[in-house]
Every structure is written in structure tokens, then in C-alpha cells.
Image (tube, rainbow, N blue to C red; front, side):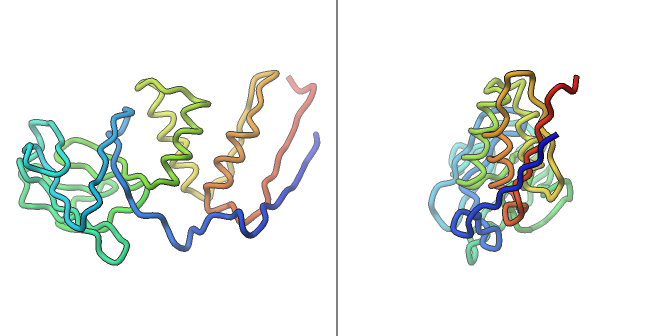
Length: 187
């Protein structure tokens, strides 16, 4: 077994202390994206008068209001019938950040930034683009956001380096070493 340790130069490390703003939502388990217009206040609901339309019988006409406040995205429930949830907790208002799961009625929306959208494209290249692969991509994105150690096993002849580096460089672990373990003849 060979162990290689590489540390990214300071200038190439992501600035996790300053998270990127949320630029849109993706319907969980699918590749359908809902872009946020570049305005301070965004109305989200089932009505076609809303800035972001979520077509579901469980979503109120005006379900929630999103506001950009000091670089953060704040959601406020607009008196909806089925509620608004952030990461599984019902809220009347709260902050939504990159990777948060905002549930409007019964529709789960995954918040994303420009950075996580780039990482998502890399993960899709490796894991697949179809709707059936999106839950695997979602799981991988949750790993990116965590401080967990990640092991990628590739079939013989596979080259997981790009995927492993993408996960490492987009994660909170990017300030530490990138450790690559190669195994040959184990099988």
C-alpha cells in the first residue's frame, strides 16, 4: 500500500468561513432546478404570480417569502396550510444555507450555491445524470459538506482521483492534506 500526502496551496483552498450565497433550489431526487431571481425578496408558492413556482397541491398559493439579509437567505412561512421546514424542522422563519433542505408543503428543495453546483456537476459526471442517480449525488454532496473521511473504491482501471479531489477541495477538510491510498493486488 502506498500513501501520498499533498496539501493544496493556501490560495487554492475554499473560503468556508465566508459561505457562498444560495442561488437556487433543486427538487430533491431530481435534476430539476429552480433559480432564484437576483432580487432582495422572493415569493415562493403554487401561484404563477410567485417568483418561484412549486407546482404541487400541497403548496399554498403564496407559501413562503425568501429575503436576502446581510448575505444570508432567510425564509418566512406566509401562513401556509402545510408548513415550511428547514432540515426537517418546522419553522415560521429561519436561515437557509448551501445544502439546506427546504420543504415547501411536501416538496423537498435542496439549496445550492455556485460552488456546490460546480461540485454537483463533477459528481454527476461520475455517478450519472438521470433522475434515478440523483439520490446518490445528493448523498455525495452531504459528504462534501461534512467533516467525515471519504473512501472511494474504483473498479480496476478506474480513475477516481478527480472525484476524490473534487470532494476534498470543496469540503471543510480542504485545509488539511489530501491523502491518497493506492492498493494493488488486493482483491
